[in-house]
Image (cartoon, rainbow, N blue to C red; front, side, top):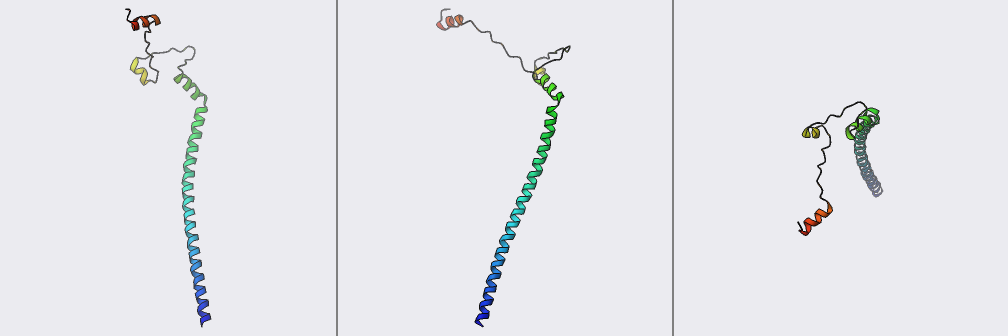
Length: 119
């Protein structure tokens, strides 16, 4: 009888141990599944970004884009073209640079005369 109880107790302990171990394994498996789902979402986002960047690269590598950028940013014109200057505020809207105001600089000796109060 004692032997039978001892065997039953050992079997019960073994079953509890197996359930705890199985429960941990299931929990770890669910956590890993969540990480896989997150990685798949990140992969889709990166694939979309890669596609957009490859499209942008193809656009930037084109000759038309290079010519457009040279003409817009460096204000180059082709032979035979005429440059049209727009009024002040329209040139800002068109993306042309604003003219740099020039300051009438005094000669150095005039600055010293004014500083010393000789005039």
